[in-house]
Image (tube, one colour):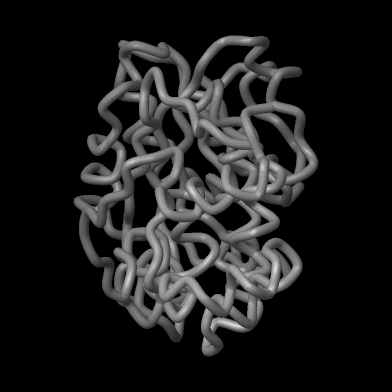
Length: 259
């Protein structure tokens, strides 16, 4: 089996690393369901299947990989081996309304889209463990003030606790990627409410970072009257200086209560 560039495939070949990733899930025994995205040839899948405290489901977009998994992992019943693109999958069709944990050596070309799908389905995903390009992983976990702190950082950290688990060297894959990799974990904040209009919150964050080098008095003109932007010294800050809590406060000032 050969990796296909069109699917962004880099097969994990390090047994110890695969076991370590599988063991990084902390809530799987509670949800009793785990969904792996992009299992490829099943290196991570093999270690997930050893955990009997939960049921493992896999979703794979490559027909050749699905055939390989059917042949080499017959313990994955047909209802748990889903031949679909994860981004187009309504997981409720597979998991029902149950909570589940998400895991995977995610294809780097769609990793940010996967993060946004996790946010959209956060009511049913208490935990995610994923392999990302290091640049993306750093962006997710970085605090305000970092050069890589951005839209993904704010939106993810508003709903999840994000932590860097460990780095993964290119030699752990076949073929080796040209970039560094890292595994991160997202743990959902329980009993949490954003306390503002989420749609407006997202809009404000994206608008601010679309011109990240400019001060907020310039980027947030669509939301605030000119006199407030010019008189309040707060708006001399730049987008990366604000944590998600401050974006919530600004959203509420605009009138974006809960919805």
